[in-house]
Image (tube, rainbow, N blue to C red):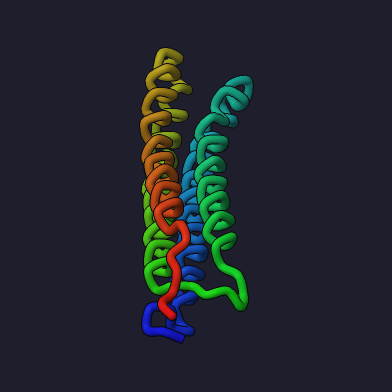
Length: 163
């Protein structure tokens, strides 16, 4: 083994897989729970508005899918017995952290906006369009992380180890 491919290099790749899944899923769970609390409050007064108010919950779930996609792509670059460079490990870690942390931030934003806007929608129906626009901008934070992670993952290419 060369110093470019130490045996512990895959640790960083697996840390990228874990961080993409864990952080984005925690963000999605927070967004779902926070928006769900608002929907439950709304449903006691006007149950006919529940279906329209599920948008924040659906958008939170998409954040977890971003983390799943990135973690599967990173895990595809990890194969037992194949040489794995330290460069690839650090790039995969950076990709996982980029997707995970932006997923966490997006889920947090979707949850807070979803809760507040769903409660406001109970009293004023004109809030709905504003809610959807704000939620889209919150979702884009996670999408940016996905794009950065995909770009980083393609930059690994065939990072070969020295002989």
